Length: 247
Length: 223
Ligand SMILES: Nc1ncnc2c1ncn2[C@@H]1O[C@H](COP(=O)(O)OP(=O)(O)OP(=O)(O)O)[C@@H](O)[C@H]1O
Ligand SMILES: [Mg+2]
Image (cartoon, rainbow over all chains, first blue to last red; front, side, top):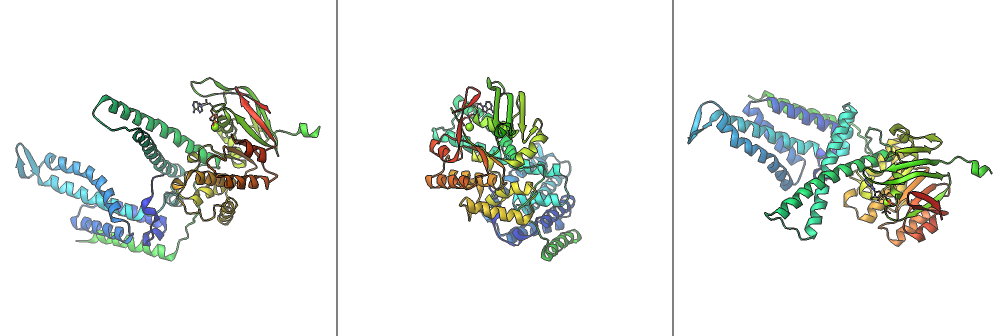
């Protein structure tokens, strides 16, 4: 199981109804994705950081997740400023750095970071089962809900097979070097990892079938919509609306 | 006479099964299991014991012959849905069995699929945990459990579905003596339960079953 590190804490967001959280996160993402006013976007980033603080998650873990996302964004920074057409602010040999490109890369950086942060604060504070169940309650088609759950399951499966195999290598004194033996071992590792996770995912599915799974997810902890959840949802949605109205 | 005429609840007729790119595991395999029977299943490693369980649950498809369970022929996926609700399989490997983050959710998964309501499920959960001496395990994370604990929780997930027939694949593996003793007591205190137990633990089989079948070369016989 992928450690649902963030779902185990205790905060306002951990207690909030997952349905409310999904709707708010979705609303936020759409607004942020379509808006290109800087004031709104900085505001969004501010809200996102505030949300993470309210969720009381470990800063180190949050940053390490952000690093992963930003390493992709870093590639954009390497590309975009040079490839855009427009006014050049600086010339590097034959390459020109274009202001439009910088603006664009900045826009993407703020947008993705705010969406990720809100995702961490709102979505990862619920367990996967609760999210899946919430999606069902929001009348998403069963097929889509299953797709979501199994994607999650299988990513975990691949990861845990990788750890097992890697440990098997380690205890027999394997040290990566630049030689054929290392490449061959890695090739085996990857191949075995995929084959075994495929197999294991099938077995997990079998285990579910054996316990009467027929395509619908039920959950032990039922959601009772409290007035407070509804109110919190309204407050958050209004904050997001406020972003749009910023000058 | 009446006894013999009684319908077998699990009936294999001339069944053949082979894994892809392998020799036959079963060829013209016939086997009857009656309600109320408590049998042990032994055989060499790789003799096909686990495979037999998976065939009963419809997780593997035979290449020939017939499977009848609860008086109906079972062929396609849909036929086995009912089987899976009434027969509980304990997998040989607990890592195949547990998939929910917490113990409570994993145990509740079966009863919820059986459309038990929320209160009933909570009650079943509590009783199951108590029966198996797992009280207090509700919020433990399944992937962090020790192997023996995983084994017990796996058993709990099957037990919670209150099946009519249990198929236990090496239930005692990784369990300490005290815990094995507890399982013996639990099984013996439910005289109406039928089961097949695969085990290499002779003492355990002696204490829990009435007769022993041997799997050998794709055939099964009483010993
Ligand atoms: N998915 C598979 N593909 C190919 N062969 C398989 C597969 N699963 C099992 N086998 C083979 O089928 C044979 C029977 O396997 P099975 O798991 O039923 O044995 P078993 O009697 O349960 O053994 P054990 O006592 O070791 O658990 C073995 O030789 C095994 O290698
Ligand atoms: Mg086996």
